[in-house]
Amino acid sequence: MSSPSSPAYSRLLSSLRRAHVLESVASVLGWDEQVNLPEGSVACRAEQMTVLAEILHAAATDPDFDAALRELEATPGALEPDASVIVRLARRDFDRAVRLPSRFVAEKARLQSEAYHAWAENRRNSTFSPYAPYLEQHLALAREEAVFQGWGDRAYDYAIDRHDPGMTTERVDALFTELKIGLLPLVREIVAGTRPTAPGLFRGFPVAGQQAFLREVTAALGFDYRRGRIDVSLHPFCGGSPADVRMTTRFDVDNPLDSLFSSIHETGHGLYEQGLRAEHLGTPLGQSVGMGVHESQSRLWENQVSRSRAFWTHFESRFRAHFPEQTAAVDSETLYRAINAVEPTLIRVDSDEVTYNLHILLRFEIEQRLFRGDLKVADLPAAWNALSTELLGLTPPSDRLGVLQDVHWSGGAFGYFPSYCIGNMMAAQLWYTALAAFPGLEADFARGDFSRLLGWLRTEIHHQGRRYDTQELVLRVTGEPLSPRHLLRYLRERYLPLADARR
Ligand code: ZN
Image 1 (tube, rainbow, N blue to C red):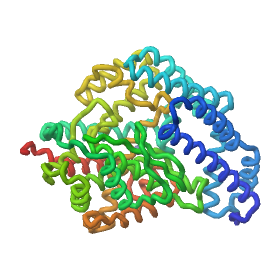
Image 2: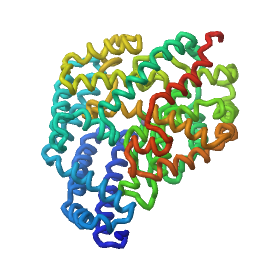
Image 3: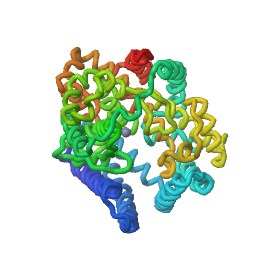
Image 4: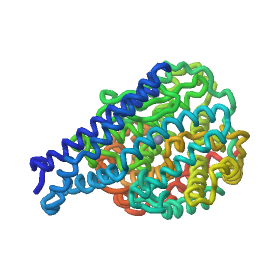
């Protein structure tokens, strides 16, 4: 059987490892760009990133890589089970990389950079039309890419599969339709019974105190700060690589919960990366499945765990210890309700976990229409505003607060948004599975102990790498196909008791 000692397998592993190292360099440079880069050095970084992208594409399409794969594929029965998974997925990645002409890769990279700056400027000015041609070009490239990859006119299926392997438009549509039917009346019921958080409830939380508290929380959840760090950026994200995770957050002295929950969210991503098996680093068995599964990890820690009463049974006194004066007038129930406040908002990234899903339903609908050709780019703002009114009950007063709010399309990242909602559904499904498997799990949280949940996620999700696609993984871990029922149940159980309108 082919093991790490077979020459072809060793060559494959070293090719994979080299590509991974290059990617990790690009990822740290990308993190640095958003955390540290001086304004005047943007052009220098763009040049570094372009050269690195070329080297990366060359490494991913290296003929030696192909030769090693061919040799191993010639005797498939001789491969050990893990090696066979690695060869199968490495072949898929290699073929996908090699099918794209370098001309196309360069053109897309150039457009991504130009469109990003056009987006940022037009978002600032709230002007859509000058940005529209960039979206037209991205759509054209997305269609061209699907053809190169052999997906023909199924360009949107390809876009979805890129982010969540094995998922299709039809499957996502079925899941989202069922979710929408349950969610719309639930949102109405919760919102009708909930009083908005009193303005000015939280004031003057020093950044140093917020930093100390979030570090205490995220370390307790299991993040290993010897192999990662958290810094500040405009938009929180998690980058780096499994051996060097780079998370970011942001601080607002009058909104400590925003920073805390953003940090916990990114920690969920970080825990997944740190949980990938070190011996498979750089191979498909040492990589995350896709965006939906990644998002399930961040959401589970952010929402199901850290917005729970059990979590705050442990951390409330710690929070008060860091901010004695600022929290003196806030009683426990008011704090818990502020943590779980539900209020529709125009901006996806500012929304609560209940109405968040409506933002994704909107974007999925828009993307489908764009790819079907039913919607022209020029008509995007009007379509966006109409759907926002229909789903959220809010009409954007400007494109900055509507169609221009997200960065994703400027990078050509169509088919990405559904992952957020897939992640929400999966998080709730994993949550109920974990609760059934571990009686007393929430009592652990009340003592500040998260190790049983993390241990289970490590074994069931993190250690699997890309062995299973999104839907196979959910079925395997929870015993049933991905379904929105668990998310709806969770939202009902957590939020309806708070929607009593009596306080
Ligand atoms: Zn996330």
